[in-house]
Image (tube, rainbow, N blue to C red; front, side, top):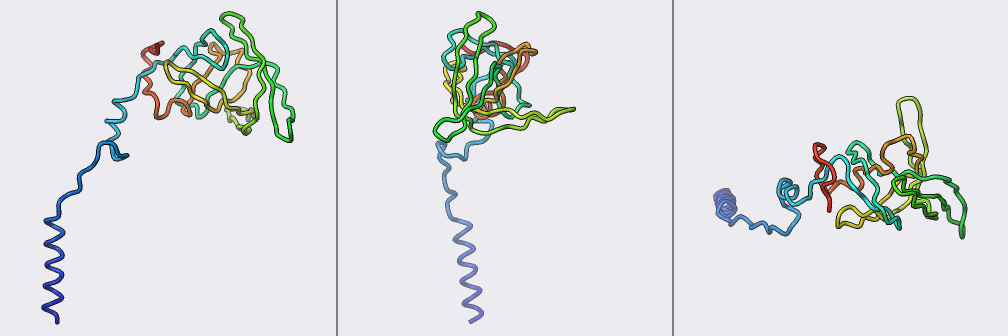
Length: 173
């Protein structure tokens, strides 16, 4: 009986050792990270982006340290519509003065932690076009009038879509 058990184990080990290695299909998720990275377009530290229905582009700061993208808006007013929480706001492109008023459902409130304070911002879905990509992404609504860039593109838009090279700017066409 012992000989049969030992013989069975030896046969099993031999079969496993000579079994063919399964071939990995290049179209599966088993791609090496460098293969995926090499397929992503590179963007610079500042890029032109288009937001919602504004015709002129915004110059956006690309910020890999920011989790969620942010946009400069004015006159933020929360309200209720059909039992849902919404927000109205104005989006003004500083470069040409183009202005639109938007109303969006509030997706959530984000807590932004800074060194000396904590800030709460509304998060809504907005369409942002970067190059040929139209992205429907979460953005926080914020008064960015004190900043050089009206739009900040964070990781929620960058991840899996772009590689960032801060030594360049305006690489998207």
